[in-house]
Length: 456
Ligand code: AVJ
Ligand code: FE
Image 1 (cartoon, rainbow, N blue to C red):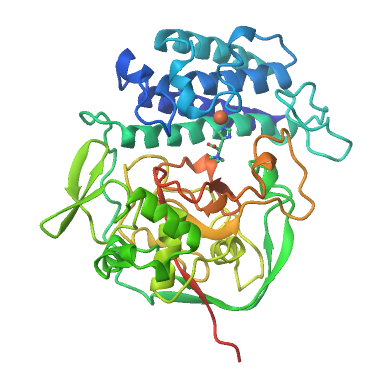
Image 2 (image 1 turned 90 degrees about the vertical axis):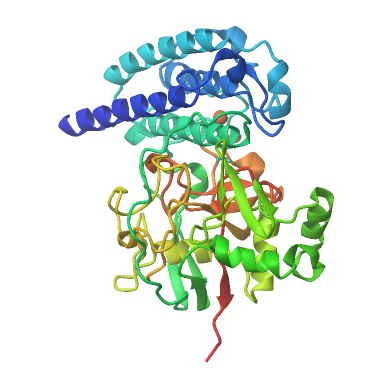
């Protein structure tokens, strides 16, 4: 049908876009030695991510959905993220950069053939599932090809690894290699009220039918919340500096027991990549040193730092549900929107996404992206820590494999929401859930605060 042809054109264009982005972060940017190097034990060598996205694409699009035989059964183990912790990947017999390029290109040629032939409206049960997967689809359940699901999953997967590769670039020492495509978008709007009151009542959290949604965004369900205040903007570097200057890193009152243990062990005194000289704070960003810009959202803080700041400020982190209601709830209709600005795809005027910039915009930028309640910069700029431990929604079913999200449930991972400047528009929406260890801060993470509203 005409609709399917349009869907396939979009998929082919997005596949191409994600691959150009991956190559831009690897083959086009760095020499072989740099691609094979371990820039941090927290991260994979960049050449691992590069071949991993090709291998994932082969496993899901050619084998699981297409029923084809493995092109390189010998390499599956190397690129299995569970078999090989990040710190060990540098010592594996990885494909060299040029071999990775050839492998990825070969997979992609076959994928485009398979896409041509695919019936995205059909609902066949998944044929085979890589890894220890959940059982096959039962009638009424999602299938791999339904509405293009498995293609969307592969596109988002590659963009997630591109964001991970950007974190590796940020940790890498050496001359800058990445260019900023765009300057800050526009002059920030004059300051609005610092907080927004979200009225008490139910809203729909998650989704049943978003064709890009992952299993952990499902099912849609009603959540009732008391009224609360949430910050209009993410916490800025200027505000965070007050916490630093007030001795916040030296006062255990603001930290949880785990947080204080982390702070002491690390000797942390400021966000990652910051350094102070003669009372002036600077930061390292993609190989450049610069003054910390006061009006940008703070970046590279871990959950513990966000939590400590919030307590110091007399507030708390929002729960995941509070974040999502602030981002989706339209009081005029009672509906939950796909994005803060509505159901339409992200445009530049809405959000700082997709690595067009190499950092967040100043707060107040892109006011067209505000939510109906007037909360700003929820999507893009920085991932926002919430107080919620990652878990499945009521009625959760793993699909199409347990290792995407289920194996991480109830393991102390904290939920992050909203995507960052490094997140591609296809890989985030107001239902999207990210998670990480509460000590991680090489990711592009910031936060905003919330507090209970007075009753009565
Ligand atoms: C959803 C970002 C937590 O990068 O660890 C990548 C995504 N899953 N490959 C991650 C993922 C498989 C995942 N996050
Ligand atoms: Fe992966």
